[in-house]
Image (cartoon, rainbow, N blue to C red; front, side):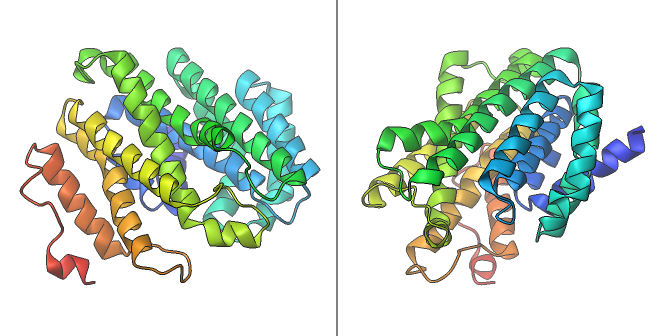
Length: 312
């Protein structure tokens, strides 16, 4: 795959499978951008396989294991076989056009991974291994359960599929930017990053709880109120994390998901459980405006989007 094809894959496919996170990735400093984009594409591909209801659980588990091996080893023969099977099989089962294209080009995503510098590729492989652990646990657990029965299991799952992403983001930033990434202690940044990622994942679970319940999956043990509080705390940790970063692009890219998450929480609060909440493009633009002010160090200038933005 030539340079133009790689650029098109990371831009067009990435944008089609993530409206909001694409905005963060394209805003990152260039030394971080490729590794984050590749990690996201691979994680989104494994997530699409895990969520393909048209395939049985055992079939999906088999694909996830083969994807794990392909990411970990880069074995050319196995990668080629897996790519062909995904393209001719599960890709066609995807309702979302972007996910169909993504799975049909999984081999190209593996090529992108192989093209990364060695230490960056190692970080991507490590975070994918953890994410795949969480996705595999999810499929295995709900074969015999309809509800997550203890808080610790849910916290561990939130770490495996999202908290570890915060750690990856941090490790990558220190690797490629060094002191230009942050002057804060590394352990503090890793802690805030984990909490941020887990907060975003809990928000996804809260937002999708009705749809998940219809599929026989209930992630929230007991009342949702403590999980809402924990999710909001995670988003606050994300803001604290972003304040410790250096440079406009990095601060903007990092804080934007937290601001979108806060807006989503507000929408959920007023939705009365009626359907899946998805904030509008105008609300996303309002969050982007707030992120610009945050990144410039003027957080108090625009604490809320203008009325004309909120009302669209």
